[in-house]
Amino acid sequence: MGSREQNTEKSIFREIGGMALYLTAILVVSYLVLHYVGQRTTVSGMSMYPALEDGDNLLVDKLTYRFRDPERFDIIVFPFRFQEETYYIKRIIGLPGETVQIADGCVFIDGVRLADDLDVEIENPGLAAVPLTLGEDEYFVLGDNRNDSSDSRDPAVGLVHRTDIIGRAVFRIWPLGGFGTLSRG
Image (cartoon, rainbow, N blue to C red; front, side, top):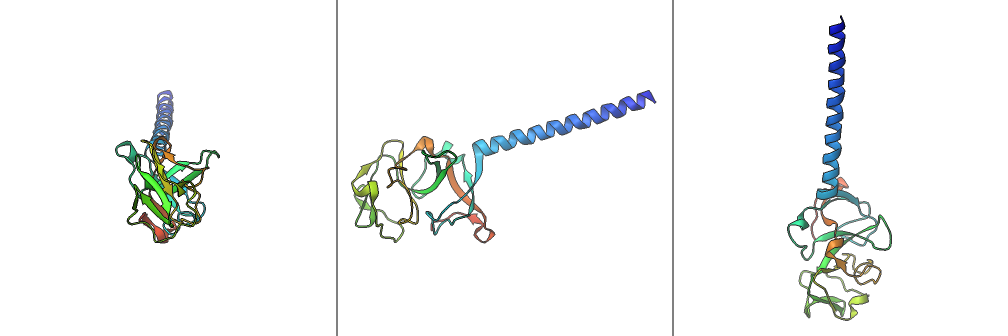
C-alpha cells in the first residue's frame, strides 16, 4: 500500500504543479497582451460624438504604431498630462511638420482647407486661431464633436507627442448595437 500512496501523492503534486504552471502561463500571456498588444477602454463623455458615445467600450491596438506612424483621422488614445489614470480619445488632424490653423470655422492644413473634415463650423479655434507648426513628433488632435471637446485647441491638452500615444482605437465591443470596427463619424 505504501507504493500506491506514494504514486497518488506524486500524481497530486504533478497535477498541482501543472495547474500552477498553466495559471502562470495565462497570467504572463495576459500581461504581455494587455501591456504590448491591446487593451480595453471606456469612452467617458461626448467629445467624440457621433463616432463614439459615452459608455462605449473599445479595443485599443497598441501594436500597429510600433511598425508605422499614426495617420490623419486615426482615433488615438493618450494620457491627460494633468490627471493620472485619465486618458483622452481624439482624432488625429495634423501630422508632424504640418501647419494647422482654424479660421472661419474650418480646419486648414498648410493653408489648404482640410478635405473630408466634418461639416461642422468650429466656434472656438483656441490655440489654432494662429498658424501652429507641428514639430517632428507632434500631432494636432480634435474631438469629432468639435464644439464640445477639450483637445489640441485647449492649452491643457495641447499638441500630442508621438511617445504619448498609447494606441489606436480600432474596435467597439459594447454596446452590441455598435459592435464592429470604428469608422468616421
